Length: 634
Image (cartoon, rainbow, N blue to C red; front, side, top):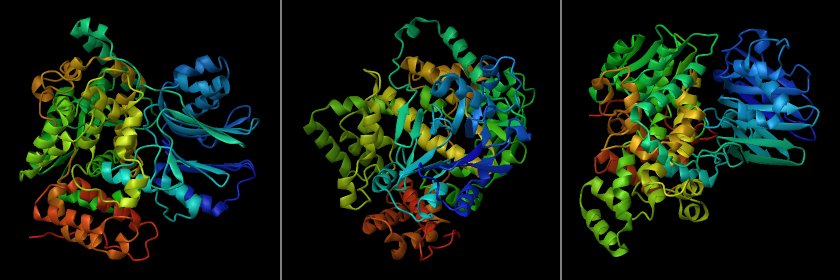
């Protein structure tokens, strides 16, 4: 687990060494153990190392292949690298035991087809000194981030946009208007967009081939067109339970490879409990499991996690916090999420990674299971709402108009949902942070850019035919929300404390299997994650499995009406700061007024605006915005 940074210019890299070193240092928390650079005229490669596998000098990067032809910088892990070694160079003496060396040999043997053979989370670049070409790849599901730019004949790439921005324009913010619009609709920025105008995300399951004449982006893996298999409906349920359990155990066992202490996150939910159970089945006697518990019962999954830990027999390490104490992490949140990011569950994510890092260097998480197996509340909801979209236009208009006049916010949301034209638009409405609120960007931005709905529609065009609305939603979440919201959150939150987070539920074999699984094994009679819960029942009693989903939330609405109220008011009423963005000031300030007065729960959209303004504040704003501070409000 590391940070990578690179530049390619066919006429020679001109970036001053001091600037590159400063940009590389921006990734220090991703790799606090070591750093290195390598240059070959037109290529400059940099690496920050978090030593996890082969802690010796044989694991240092940038790393050259044994024949000197290839040089790699690599962020992530190749979990099956030990199994690959006998197929690559039987009988050859390896310099060390690192998966980086295995990756180099895999590329030397198979070229770009090495991606078909490796199972892992990764973002890497390999320079071919003979062909003068650069191969840059991101893992199938998008666990590891990778950003790049192609500007004025120079290619740059790296783990975070903040480092690339330093190389591109000395860190001066140049906003991409389409990313701004989409961010204010979703609360995050989907690939290939980036908030920086000239920087792009490499989408999950893609690679770049770079030579002096062109840059080519290629998708090498795509689950979206896999069809649900009706034959699975005819198989005994017990057989499917065992098959899914075996896949989870295999995915977890692969991710136990480590030369440093390893543990797992444990909430009160299904997914993390399954991961910990699989660790036990793989032979880890008393795995360390980490939980953040809250004094406020509405947010406290501590008791449920403790019950699961007792039944699983783990070394349960938990920390009790007041939800308000998460605000102490706000400066770290703003600093480390180096493009706007509005998922407030990053706060407890940072808290649990901070706790885990005191004991281990690697932790396994349950991220990915909700998207694959139907865990979110809006999946059954979207199936109930989708038939209403087929009502006659006049009927929808009449019912929507009546609902829109009612004082209840949910009635207004229902009216908004009725205006959707199809299941993709309905998904965007339910998933978005703006809901029925008017656009916050200026009209010229709205007219000249694509909406988030268009990005979802573009992705859904590759889906298998005849999917239900909820199946469409799951695939949209897996292809866009998972990599660009949730895995982004986990990556940055864990790297802020130099902790490597591994996500077994994102194993590509599990993803492909889940795509074939018919809907009735995901949602049944209002029950979410039906089959996954059946697997967990092998290891935990029913009361630990069948309980309401709580999520990993924080009381944003209360914060914005209480301890963060003055802070939010000062930022949003700072005309100098607001003038840096093409926003409708009156709508933004009305949004704040409505939230403060309790007239509507607009906190997801309001928080998105606040995180946007905080981001802009840290990127060259001459008039400083209010410091991150808070006080109680009567």
